[in-house]
Every structure is written in C-alpha cells, then in structure tokens.
Length: 144
Image (tube, rainbow, N blue to C red; front, side, top):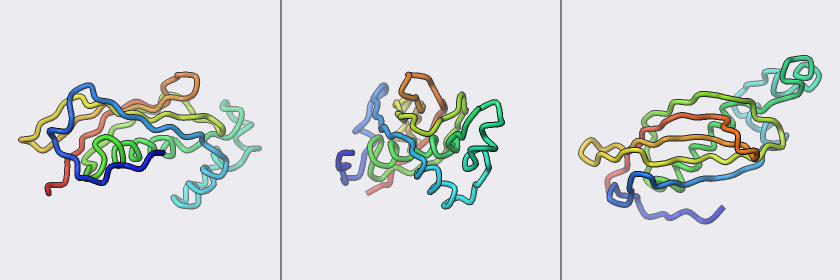
C-alpha cells in the first residue's frame, strides 16, 4: 500500500466518477484476529468441522471483515485524510473464503459541499470478479 496523502481532503478535490480501490488476500490469521478483536467466534468462521457440514462446505470469513476494507479506502484513499464516515449500507452477496483476494472500491456518486456530504457507491469484489458486497456510503470532510 502506498503512503496516503496526509493533507486534509477538500470537496473541490473530487469529481463524480472518481474511483479508488484497495486489495487484500484474506488469510486464516486475518479471520482469527477479527474474531479475537470483535468477539465474533461464530463456528462458521472459526471451526472447520462445523463449517464443513454447512452448505458453505468450509469456513468463510466474517462479512464485516470483508466490508471493513471499505473503511481503508475511504479513510486513506478516497476521500482520504479528513474523511468522516456518516453512513454505510452493505448488501452481502456471496461469501468470502479464506485465501480470496478482495478488492474494495469506492466511486464518487455525488458531491454537495453546501450540505457537506460526498455520496459514494461502494463494493467489494473477489479475485474472480464476483461482487461480494455492494453498498453506498455518505462521508463528510473535516474542515480546516
């Protein structure tokens, strides 16, 4: 990951259609750390025997682990430094499996400096180009 720009973002820095993304391969260690951090030890995520007996056939990563990659994009890339999350909707479309390479992306859908809001389309895709999560976010920017 490149070093993010530490200058506070401004509404005039953005335009509709602008995009940014971040990719990460989801490891067993990521799932274990997420379970430890959140306390979500659902056996679907942490118990191979249990998960193998479900229709998933194996362990899957927490949906919110995959969704949290959107925070990386919003907080470090677009809008980046000074972004304040106001809202996020997520629709989970398919599971993330351990070893999947996920790409979280955001696209500017609307900018309203008077209302101090940037509307973003958001999504997470896997290495096969399948949409794992889709949604929308609303962010504001810190005033300097």
